[in-house]
Image (cartoon, rainbow, N blue to C red; front, side, top):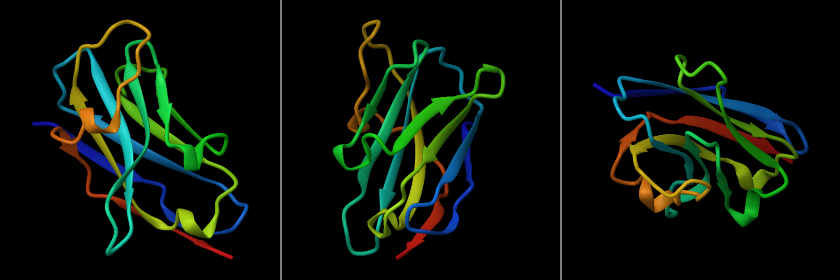
Length: 131
């Protein structure tokens, strides 16, 4: 059974930083597209960043480029994805979700958020940024 558990959310003032974690267990695939999404009540969910393993190729939404960084743990056995969020803005306030889907893509390619929508999801962690 695949399980994803997010942690690290909280409240922060604008300009500050937070690091989200997503611990993944139960996956059987060696090729994974892992993604962060966010959603504000009343608005559509939006993809924030993806990372593909093996290889570590990444994709970022324009609104977080240069501010957020997605990584995965060096210890493959831990299978944990991180989202380092720097330069936080009030508009980053949202519930953040991680998701994972087994996927085989060409070496060096990036995976897109839509590749993960049908996969496994975590329960979400709230990020609130005040001005």
